[in-house]
Image 1 (cartoon, rainbow, N blue to C red):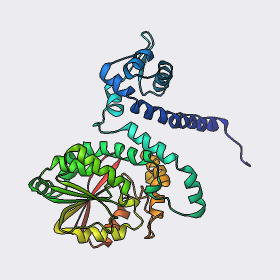
Image 2: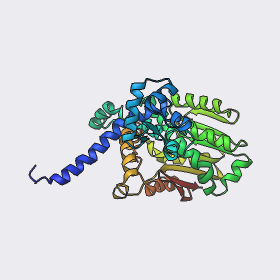
Image 3: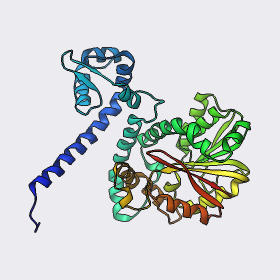
Image 4: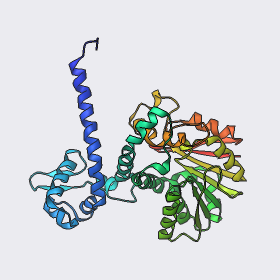
Length: 354
């Protein structure tokens, strides 16, 4: 270290690190609070001491008291010192305790913990350049991904994204054929089937474990009469004449998105639409140096990029590919039009047509 260290700048960085360290260890506690029903009890039954919350949730008082203090220190619950009780504000409850809320904080942190658990495999991958496939990730990655993304899809898919596409809602209402490619655990396919009972949805994903869970999710939702799932890649899913093909947060994960785009073009009806949902991203690194970009670059390093590297094709777009890169893949595949149709703080939504 030849240069002089500015101690004020150094301590400012250490303060940032302390916040990040607290966030990392807090993530496990948020997941515990979700799995044990602690947040849901606070939201439904009101303020509680550690003893009261433990009694409500059949958990241990000492653990719960320590958990509550940590949650209050992080600003995830409020604390009334005079009464010794903890509570959730309506906004905290929406993010932490409502499975149908617009953002699932527990889902996001479950996904994050699952991704971090794969650091040993990623250490070797960094040295060799090898990939690590989605099927090689642990169950928290699969379940957390569904929990986190489903919240956003439930909030925006039917209300905002589909109406932004030209003529698609009318087709779905009348009865359309839909292919949900890279469907994961089936959250998006089930939402489509519930909203448009006259339509039929064919979900596909290369990961057989996800397909098994997606089939169960559809049965639990009572939509198996109009939703089917099959294990297939984006290059091998079957069927033609689809009115709508959708790829939800998965095109950038593929090793060969170009061939996937060509296959999707062939699977569409002449007046069909490809709905492409991708992470919010600018086209440059500088444009992505913000909190959302930080989230996606780090997830991409541990999940998206290694999955793409595990597949043939030579692409590795990453979660922060940006609109220009996605446009290039789509138009090079022979689509006649491509446009940004909608966006949220976490997603960009594109429409591609023949």
